[in-house]
Image (spheres, rainbow, N blue to C red):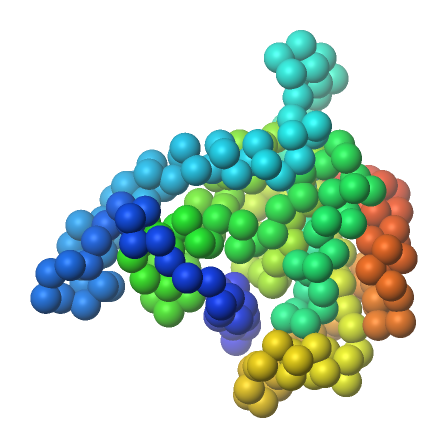
Amino acid sequence: MARPCADRHHQNDIGWDETAKCCTASDSNSAEQAFSAKCGAGDRRLENCLQARIQRTISTITPSAMMTGSELSRQELTLAGRKTNHIHYILGAPGSGKTVIIPYLRRLLPDWIVIDWDELMLPAERLAGFPIRDSEALWKPYEALMKSVTEMLAPNPVLLLGVCTPAQLAEWPISGWTVLDVDDGERAVRLRRRGEPSHAIHEANSDAAEYRALGLRTIDVTTLTLEDAANAIATNIRMAPPTLSRRS
C-alpha cells in the first residue's frame, strides 16, 4: 500500500509563531484534542482562516505570472468550451532536489506559478497549533486545501512539486506528470547531509523505486547541475501537451 503524501515528507526544522495560531491548545487536553474540539472534522475554519495567507503567498510566488482582468478575459475566450486546468506535477522522492530547484524553475518559467506541496504547511501548522505531519487526521484536509489553492490559480499554468502519486491525486485536474529522480546512492548522501536517519533514507529510496515503476516521463538529474536540471524540466514541460481535466 502506498504511503500517504504527508508521510513521505520529512519534518522541516522551522519554529512556530505562537501568536499566529487560529486554534490554540492552551487547555489541559493535547494539541490535537484541542484542535479537534475547536476545528473538528468537517469544520472549514482552517481553510477559511488561511485565505488571507494564501493570497499573500500567491502574490510572492511569481507575481508576473498572475493574469490581469483583460488577460483573464482573453484566456477565458480561448478556453471557451474546454474544461481544462494546466497543472503539471513534478513527482520526486525526498532527496531528489525538489526544493532547491524551485528558484531556477521560476526563473526559466516566468509564466508559470511554481509551488511546493509544503508551501502552506507552516501557516497551516501555525493555525492548527501542532505539526500537520504528526496528525494523520489532518493529511486529507491539507491535501484538500492545496487542491483548492491550486485550482484557484487557474487558468494560470501551475507547476506543483511534491511526493503524491497519480493514484493519490486521482481527483485532481492534473494535465501532466514528470518524475524527478536521482540514483539511490546520491539520494542517501543528500539525506545523510540533512541529518536524516537510516530508516528515512530507506523509505525515500523505496518511494523512488515506486515512482520509477509508474511509467511516467522521468528526468534523472544525478549528474546535472541545478541549472541544467531545471532546463531539462522546463523543456519537458513546454513540450508536454495539456490533457482534459478529470472534472466534468
